[in-house]
Length: 122
Image 1 (tube, rainbow, N blue to C red):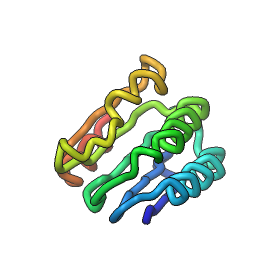
Image 2 (image 1 turned 135 degrees about the horizontal axis):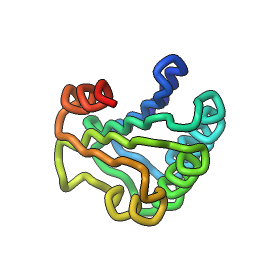
Image 3 (image 1 turned 90 degrees about the vertical axis):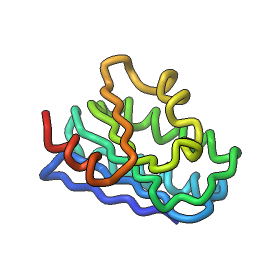
């Protein structure tokens, strides 16, 4: 399962993954993220929370790529990730090198609290 929250006042999109993610669900997520991004201004921030993620099928990679590409195209400025277990990175770090512009700031934290503190600083 996934949750997407868009906070226009904070120019922030929050994407949380829960449980076991299969390709069809990742595809629906990519579609929903793409449809919501126009609500935000260029320079928006993306918070991705993997705290509740159990596993993600490797076949979800094209959908993750689509999310990154859509965010990049829409002008994401900062990507903040919560990955409590580094073994559950699901390839985000490597994929970021190819799907985000060099100017996009990418930060990874083990706790949600650390991530939220990073979002408070400019």
